[in-house]
Image (cartoon, rainbow, N blue to C red):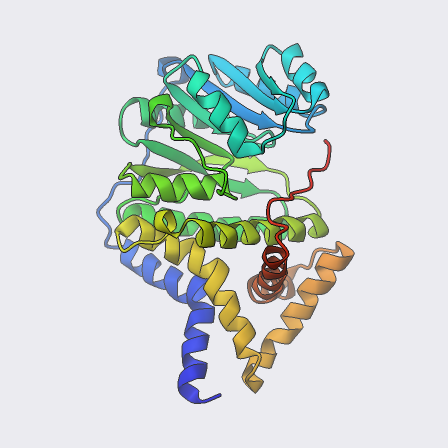
Length: 354
């Protein structure tokens, strides 16, 4: 491997975690866009509906629905497919249940429920999302007052390794917001008007990635309020790895199936590519290619540490954990996701009952 190829691969491998954040972080110091920062009184927020797709969540859906009632939601719709226990648990705490005997996936549940909600402003949430009243009010207020067509918050996880990653990701979104707005939505909480909704097609493996790309393509104002935090409990190391490779496999599937909505030269698509697609797809491929050079073998200890952590369920801490997370994890997850995609397992997400 000659020096030019090695240099190009090194830049590609380090782009997502080093060069892109450095460029965006430096440029954001001169950014002129004011981040979304408004703190309305919850009493002044208009009526809104919450839509929650749920499957095998009979022990947790009650707490979730009660949280949204406490947050001031005017309507809570729980969409349940082929799971009578969860449907009954949701109905017991006053939610409107949209039930189907056929399980079509999260995108089909949203397509069925969103057009039928009572209120114009609708908030899409996951069952494991935990959010306070003030955060919900801010999302709804941004849409109701016309500051954004589609708006989301940022994700916060409790585990050390996952928390470290999401702190980095959320800092990057804050920088992108100062440069004109960050269009990268997370599925834990997305707010829009009912009239803005467009059905998610069957080929969309990731609903939040599709909503992000399609909204940019449609010319909608997509923003992220980084003061709105959707909290989620981290799973153990084995569960984290399974979720990571399935998500990366979904991104790969999405790019192959729908490049028109995810790739482009406008500002929104470039941020999507630099922030997520390049980091998930191109950088790990460059890391694998670097193993063909002796200096690339320096990646092997973090890779082996991550494999050991994923197999045993033991989380690594300190600098060793950081190296395993930032260097080892992308390689292992990318290889596993590519194998998953090759064997067409992307859509077969096995849900564990809760």
